[in-house]
Image (cartoon, rainbow, N blue to C red):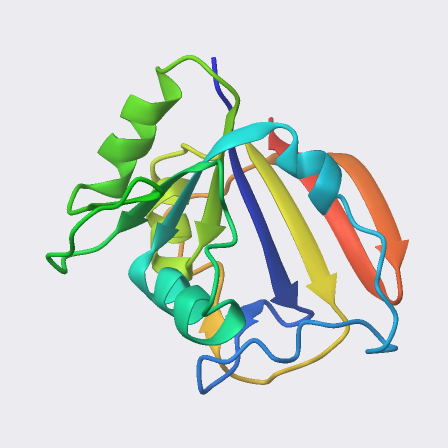
Length: 176
């Protein structure tokens, strides 16, 4: 069965975006250095990406406005907006937990939960995330969009791997 993997970067104080919703701080100690990461290896293990509207909008308007960055990967954008799907991107107005549960039953590689916080928090609450790939960026933002909101119960995790490069610490956890 497919695994559902949250692969995301956070500030040291737990934010995925700053107070203005920006992510221009996503770099290591030396902004000119390209850090080693698990990203390339991770991308080989997935065939589906699920993201919320805000993450999608930021990708297509700021981060990569001229080209869809997840070519060749089934992409699902969870939104209440009525948008026309394309061959690359399916816009779905569906409960994210139901969507992920349905996708998980299909054959293929793993599912990447790309963002944002609201989507991730809903899936965490329903215990649908199998692995957490968290890249901790060496910055304290003080405010912004927190990845983990209030939780009704603890979620025990098991550390699988750590990696550091250019001050960024990559952590991989599985549910216990």
